[in-house]
Amino acid sequence: MSYTILVTNDDGYEAKGLLSLVEALRQLEDVRVVVVAPANEKSACGHSLTLVRPLRFVSVDDDFYKLDDGTPSDCVYLSLSSLFGDSKPDLLVSGINRGSNMGEDITYSGTAAGAMEGVLHDIPSIAISQVMDFTNPDGDFSLASKTIKEIVLKIKDGTFPLPHREFLNINIPPEVQEAKMKVTYAGYRFYANDSHVHRNPRGEEHYWLGLHPLAFRPREGQKGLSDYEAIESGFISVTPVHLDMSAYKSMSKLQEWL
Image 1 (cartoon, one colour):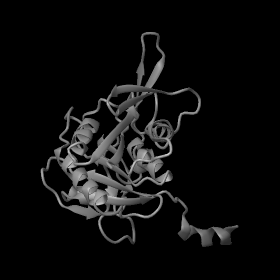
Image 2 (cartoon, helix red, strand yellow):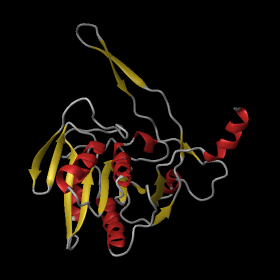
Image 3 (tube, one colour):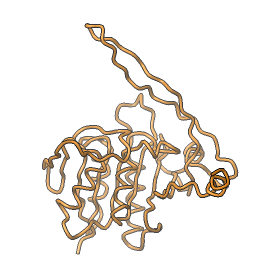
Image 4 (cartoon, one colour):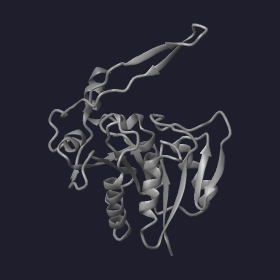
């Protein structure tokens, strides 16, 4: 019986990172790769589902579908009921994202959201992203492809290393061909509030959101490396992420305040 991997992303079904991921996984023996990806780019869409309009699967190739006009979470949610029925894939991989998903960016990320949706349905899940210079229009996904093959083989031949409702968030350093893996925590990201206003010929205003620079600091009292520190040092960052967002350390203080 083949080992089935469901693949999605948030850069769209034609993205180079997704195609590199699919090519890498289909090189593995006894592995079936099923791709369900958004028809259009859905970067920073977060863990959103489409509730106000119908969605449609469009077959692109064998075991390869685009969802018109769905989010990564839609892709996972609908594929489980429409393509898999009573069965489930053995593993879900979301990516390879063009750009980083570190620190609080995880909350924005459609790539991470694909993995979140997977673990909500008890499917071991991985999000993988390639940190890159956006002045390079293509990007190099060779190390990311090699890394995900190693990780998937380790899971396939053994067990998934995380408990219920936790997923692996992997970030690959740029411009290196070899790198060691480091277990990290999600860093503390600094955010700007950058937007650009433009006017059409009728004088109506339109806005583009700006691109935030990668600026982080370590979290106070946290041992080890953050994801950003690992990337800056040339390591592959592997972060375990859980979906329980309760602030447990603040519960006693909040109870006293109430």
